[in-house]
Image (tube, rainbow, N blue to C red; front, side, top):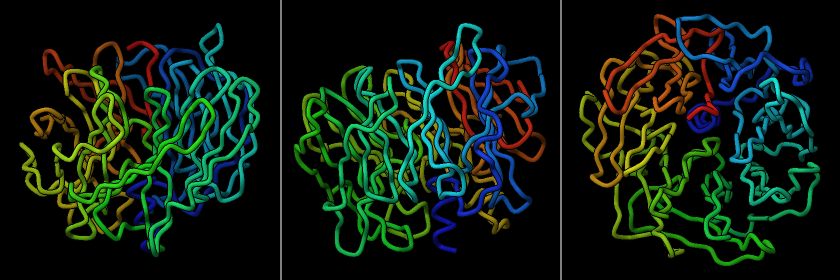
Length: 404
């Protein structure tokens, strides 16, 4: 049960799956907007994932999964700046162990361009590309990073981070980031219950040119832990000033004192900035009647502003099913002022419906609420909101638009 709690909170995945990953590898519907849905059983602990493209976001249209391609349950796509779209197998196994690469073809349809076999029990979840011939995929349960050629989808080498395990825990690499020709690998350091045991923020650094190890960095002075949400590739990012931020998820609110927060590595530096402390678990959140346990999904824009889905157990205290409880709340985070504010008027969501992205200047939130499953928008300039811009079959779990 503890493992299931962790998987819901950090990866929203389970050991069960009914998804056949080979159902549809052909082209889908057309458009420059991508979204995925998760269709679950009533308890929310098993199901299937689907990815499709559409051309418009609005008008209250309803989309089923008829033209979608199948996804591994509990793992969500990564879209790189090159336009490559990577799709993973089930986070905890149960589907064909392949990393798949799609692109939008000339008709704006998802077209499969290559596959690469992955090791068993890998929990593959994150891809970052260094260039057209080199990329990295994180195999979290194996304490492993696979280096591969994204053009040919062939493995080049492997980076083993198991030597960075602290006593009684696995290193468990999370989200990845490349800055200044350095690969930053977040190290979650989880025990057998998939929980942290101390407040530490740790990363391993590698030279992208030859994958040689540079150093390991570790900070225990910030007072929080769990660097990055393991399947959110936006939970470690570089802003327009060159500073790197890391969303730390702590113990997801389940172990008092093992907190969530945001860490920073300043431009030109390779150590965690001890002067920047932003504890989310103890922060006062404007518009939130309870404590904030963590930020479950991130979307940085500019000028220090990050939008997110806050996770707060106290928003739905009567619902003991962590898969279906409405505990996700849309928030805006000011990284400079270290403040968090609820976006009024947008509905709460469950853990399967935390899609986020940007489309034509608006912040897009997926929502699985009491009234519908679909997408909402927030305009950062006018602060206008629009709910139910489209509805979908299943819980909206991923969003990406090529029309920023």
